Length: 170
Length: 148
Image 1 (cartoon, rainbow over the protein chains, first blue to last red):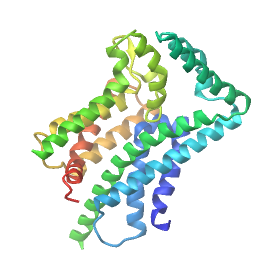
Image 2: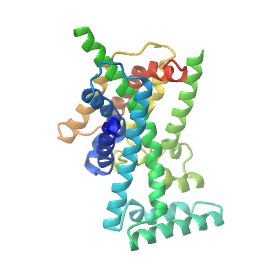
Image 3: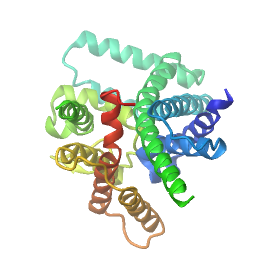
Image 4: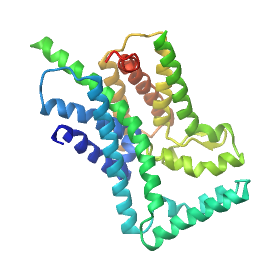
């Protein structure tokens, strides 16, 4: 567990930043790659073995950071929804229903609208919807993995470049 | 040869991703695009703030990501295409420079030194995206050719 402390810490940080509106405006799509990058550099600082970071390690750290960011991001969003009994879905309810009226298949439209109304009702009454939470996690998970992998590879490359520089100076 | 196949696969994946946030502009006012919009918008909200005032209009429809993110993704796409020509990775300094440009733009517009410009945000994102792919290209090819 201690071995993967830095992806947990950086994933937590990214999870917090993912739901902070002002910070999100600044950092945008760079939150998770930056978290993955820092998790590798942090690990390199904490455990200075002097060995090159392998691609496997870069990928694993990137994946884990993305996964933890998805977990924490989802958790915080569910928590805020639970406290406020509202989120972007409830706020955009009318816009979504209006957009879905364009669906030509009536049976499909009814199924989607019923499902959506059930989610909205759950959120407004109890503050929690299992379907919404699962969809939210799947959504965060997918992007977390892709962007985490990218950040992991970048961290590995930068970490190794730094190491080569240190060795040359030495 | 193997690297070129990997490049083509990456081009396809990136093109799908880019199509995802811009499909509404290509198929405006079709029932499918209108119906899918809320779902896909929510999906891309994970990776972009989608601030209404900052989104670009194409064919009268807004992209689902901000100009900076659109620039980064298009930059990665362009980087993959450029990697057919520039086969060795670029220096870290260039990547850092492109990152600093984004950071400067964010800081200076936040503190109202100058007004937010969609064009500048897009160009800085584009430069960063191209640099990012050209910097890590060798690692990506190593993964697929199992030279790890």
